[in-house]
Length: 199
Image 1 (cartoon, rainbow, N blue to C red):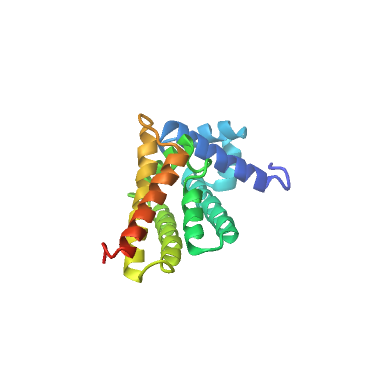
Image 2: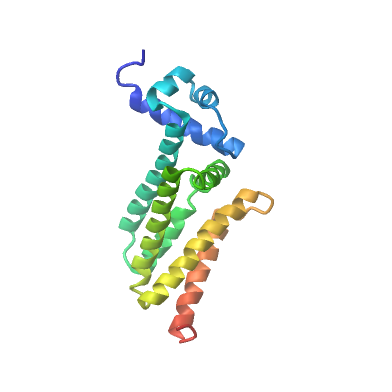
């Protein structure tokens, strides 16, 4: 019988363990037993809290997205001007816990699962929309709306692409270099707009 008051602690431990195991294996073919062992609980307790591995995996992707959202909200509150807010969004995208190899492997496993799971796909679409919205909202203060949308798409694609490059591990890109590349892209696009080189 689970101890009273331990459910939130155990649920978080299981979600964290799931992300570690998925990240280590680079796949969602992990078992509930492997996750439970990593969390230091029995498989029966893991099933008690989540019902199935699928529900635990959904909670894991939800946890990643919640952390990213919370970090973005905090970072945006500390930035003033639109250009500073853009930099905050970029920094959050590449912060150490999200850009860690195991977390990147988990993200990629969830993207693969989204081809089969409508619920996983829905969560990842929410992430993509939120990133795009944060970028556009601040770019609109710096350039026309159509240009803001185009630059936001490019920056979002660059962020996602750098995650994929990082997952290869053969030529990893540092957090600082990833931020600089994305900042350079936005700066060059805004500079070209200012010079009338891009319509």
